Image 1 (cartoon, rainbow, N blue to C red):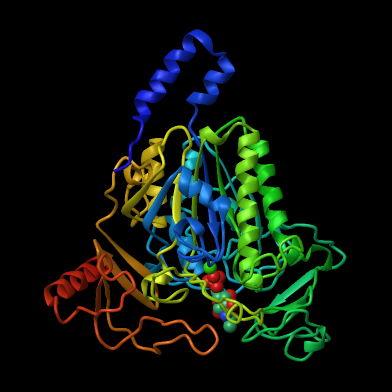
Image 2: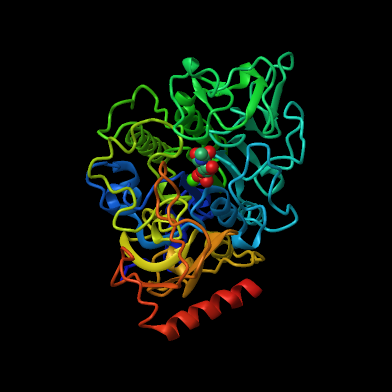
Length: 506
Ligand code: NG6
Ligand code: CA
């Protein structure tokens, strides 16, 4: 399949050639461990990227990573929603085993066990400076924390040296950024209050004051109003610290570039966690109306531009060849996820999940099967890989890559697949979260019976994949999961059911 330079031989060759003709500084640069950047989109589907076949929407910058690196055709997020997928990526553990790894309210405490290894703590042990910028959604601090004081534990307690994150999500209060242990830009004279139980007296809400809104909710999202947009949850005060949705892309790009700039002399790991195209979708005016798909398309174009700016910056600093860049998404796509912004009306022929069935929230493949690509320019030759890989495998794989001991539990070392040396990834993978799982094994997917509705409802309108019977699909022959072959292959149903039970019992 993929042609790959023998990395070790290459490094040795480079090292030898430097003995005679390169300066000490240059030698150090080439021989150091490559930087690692994980760029993580929020709700971007398999079919939203032009390298994966999107024709209506063009993503030339994300395509650069796919086309100049390895494009994985079977790359997975751990779950069809955000927090569990992020938890798996950073912890290397299955989210269905963790009670709190579910979509979290904005005042949820940190869900990690801070004594356990994570992707950033492992890389820090390997000598990397580690940073996170952007969406977090993994909880912060402890129960009933005062947001005006020190906000911990958080990213700094699970292995990040630096952090600049959204406190919750862009649709959940508090609508602020947290830098290290503190809310960025908070004025002590105007403290912030946060509640997920009741409103603060005198504060308008989207439900009671729709005349104050520039973006209206379609469902939920009718509580505190900030920047003309009502959110989930209630807050008061903290005015100087509130973010401006239109600038969020620029804010995270600026902070990411600043992190790279501060750490360019030594190996760094950056988790650049984009907020696009999650709701509310509020592009910078530079991108408003630029796609034919309404705000959802516009913010994907914005995200693509952000990625391009980051790639250009690495080029400018001459870091590209010494940096491994991974791009993926935390879960599949959704059109109307709570705001009236024409995502359904303007979608036209666009297929956000490509030819996969379902999307965000779904047990069908569109929930977790996402764009997944890795570029290491100058070392890895471009190619397409069919290896089965999960974001949850990053800790174990990069532990192997950097010579660290892996103590994460469920991720596998698939570094050879990630670096394009092998077309063989994992054999099987459980997908989902506490309230619903499926299993992919080779080309087979088994969805066990699950209680509950078959659709997420009239707004999000996604097939959940739940059914009263076993569903078995061969996704090599039937990528769109149209033919349930459970009755035809009972022994395969049993095999995969036993495998789920075995993994669940561990
Ligand atoms: C849902 C929200 C949705 C989104 C999702 C989490 C409503 C009606 N819907 O509950 O808008 O925030 O949670 O998305 O409130 S995720 O990508 O962060 O998992
Ligand atoms: Ca998400």
